[in-house]
Image (tube, rainbow, N blue to C red; front, top):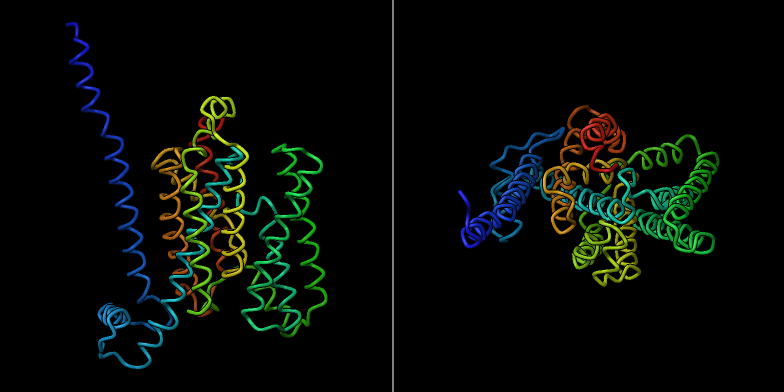
Amino acid sequence: MQVSPTTDSRRGESRAPAPRTSTRIRMFLLFAGLVAIVLVSFPLGPFAVDTGTVLRVLIAKVTGAGHGAGAVEETIVAQVRLPRIIGAVLVGAGLAAAGAGYQSMFRNPLVSPAILGVSAGAGFGAALGLLAELPWPAIQAMAFVFGLVAAALALTIARLLGRGSTVVLVLAGVVVSTLFQAFISITQFMANPEDTLPSITFWLMGGLGRIRSEDLIGAAVLIVICLAALYTVRWPVTVLAAGSDEASTLGVNRALTWAVVIGASTLLTATAVSLAGIVGWVGLVVPHLARMIVGPSFDRLLPAAVLMGAGFLVLVDDVARSASTMELPLGVLTAVIGAPFFVLLLARVRSQWS
């Protein structure tokens, strides 16, 4: 039977909202999953705190009312675990968003937030601060600054030698990362093996044990601003990911979009590393997972990656502080989980990147 154009168009209209509705449902489920993970994470740890006490302390923290919990429980929930969980959310969200931005702009599934040498630069800054026995806020500041210095150096080399070539930019990032890794090795060689060297080594392996409430305010503001900047260019990024010809046809400002994405992703990475040390694989694996769930369009990929990255790192941190009497390094756990999982992901989605 021949279908009239009117009937066909109506059927198309009835089907059109389905993908958008499906995406909204998936986003809601991801958000609900993150909330559930966060709530479940509070009772976990070497010192057990029941869920009722956690909820009373958190409600009292917001409303200012009494909670009836003991001083020890209040300290553990409000001053130890709350900042740590918020830090895991911020770091996971920042690294996943940076990875999604880099992968979309470079059109390369192997790109991670460490591509411009930011992680190595931040690691050297922190190692230098630990070697000089600076206070913790100064160490975080040095990690952040040297992370930006490494990225600026990679971008400068690429600009001087590559004239906008993506391949040269990636190679410049590899060179800068190798250079700062050498600087880290020199710093470790000079460190006191009794106290400073273990501190440097543990920081480089990643962890959230030192995070306090005062560390989170500035980092949270900067991460939110960078996420908002990435979201404002979601449509140009989607078009550029499809190819330069399409972007030129649609009038996309390639230079401006590149500047926003690279700048925001670099700031996100530097901030995350300054808070938690070098935590690998989050920005590499999570964007792939998000892409499988919501598709490659950046307007959906970015929020999905943010939610999944936050939830993933909270879960990994739960394991880090609960699986053993000693806290396990966060970067080691993400590598153990992420590396084999990434191989499976590549085997499943390799046709999408061919």
